[in-house]
Length: 145
Image (cartoon, rainbow, N blue to C red; front, top):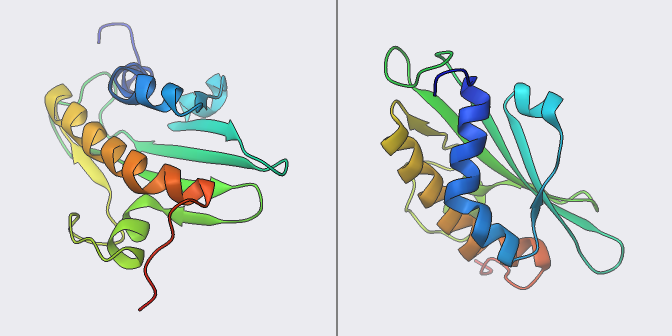
């Protein structure tokens, strides 16, 4: 990670872990270096009816140039559509679909090391692919209680 900011390192690992899967679903990382520097990474896809779907990662990095000490860094995932639909991935999975795979509906994935970051991104990516992307496309709706 020498010479890279925590945000740049996160972006590289993010693309390594979920980049191919998101690309296969026609999502592309927006080229927005200023937002990347602030810890915001958005993957977007054009949907039918001139709508856009967005998967947004928000990183809060507590240690510059390292994730190995101090307070853990964390990120969350928010799903958005240009028609105003917006939901945190954790709330969608836990509250809307009733899947208790995460500790709460206000979950932030935390990590201190590169290995922990990779595992956290893989978990969030699997949930995004299984629930978030179909939900954004209107192909998967939560059960009616």
